[in-house]
Image (cartoon, rainbow, N blue to C red):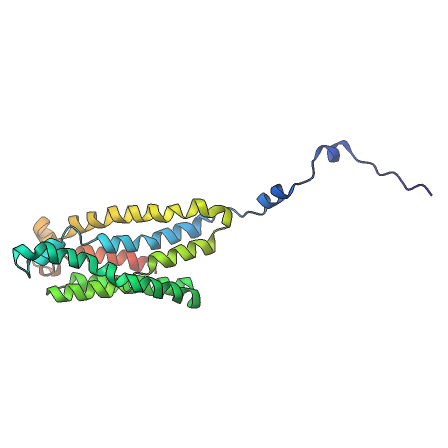
Length: 219
């Protein structure tokens, strides 16, 4: 018996078979902009909290120490947050592996917000140091956000997604000192609005409240 002839149309003949590379490219999902932007907004809270006090730390410290020691104590106060963050980042990273990224981020954001408000209510140098150190213990946002970015992105998108984390840090490092400088001592800058108010009694509370709201929004 002679097998029947198979016919191939001109249209079928013009379509080349898919190569392995083409098939792999077709399997890559779209860039997850929604998830990536959410992670970046959460990540913004940490550089904001770190740099917020840079403009007013010397003035805060000057209320409690002699003038020739202001630089030393202001530097120590600024670094206290980061010292606490050394073990904290390891802890929150491991906890997020076991309990999930969202619970770890929510705990970090909530703790950061509360500690920022407590820091703004400082009435002694040791209170300021204590609340700043406590806030650093919740500074796991950066590490967990990097892990979350890996979770939500395809391997082909990571070279595009991960540099955005550094970009967010740059934005936060810019915004933090600006917020701290513009909103500290508001009763002196805007007496009609803030004179004889809580923000007159606690002159560094307003920038801390603004940064705390930024953290609470993304919980």
